[in-house]
Image (spheres, rainbow, N blue to C red):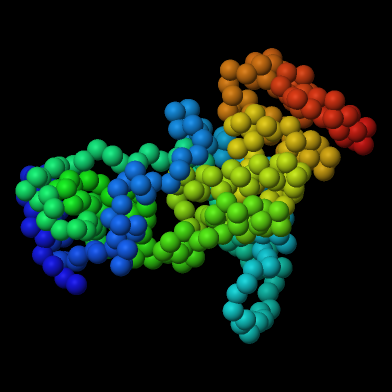
Length: 346
């Protein structure tokens, strides 16, 4: 039902609302406005996960050296990266190629597949928008429903799109994150994302799927459904990372886009011992050394970082891992035996 919306616009927002008012779109909350669109930001905000006052991991995560280390330890098992993936059946195409052309096609295919290993950003939970833009008492109790204004200009990124709410008490504020996500999905729908949060992310269903070891499926769906700073995304991914580490199923995520985030999570919370032990047992000495280097970057004030700086530039990989075992590890005996077995095999 269309309706014009009278209001007293401030100078900074008059242009915006002049452009939006012609839409005359009245959001009544889809028959349940109190729950879907008319709830306050405090009522609709997702429960926070983790301490948002701790240092921000994102600047460290996007550092070029950190990204290089995460990419190296992720690995590239082409059989695992390439498939199997569900897709529509198509008739095969055959081409006759020279050796040089075949190498070029293989390199191009590798470049295309490497895009599937792009690591999701690791961020702190986003904070709710609670500061009102304006309060107009003349509009108080004008209606029983909130009004949502969305800038539908083509080409604007979802995170930059202007979405504001005029509440029943006359308050004008930036739309809560959950309302913003739903408006973006209406006007700019993304494949794989649902309008409302799927029930698979509820605690009970999530725990059942984790018990079934559907780690990659859960993480892939979370990347489609949520933004990387969404508290639900952080809650879900951290729960999966913890389950993977507890069960020793690190190899299930290796050569997927989620292995780098798993490694960063374990290093960030100083729980990298099990992953390091898994690397040593699988004869991934280079990955083990890179994981220790990652730890030194994330925790520059640690004893491990201080000891690594004292190593000579020509020190071998075992010496780097040994520094972590001597200064930081809580599984020193197991790691020492695994490192010794690796050295004896060489």
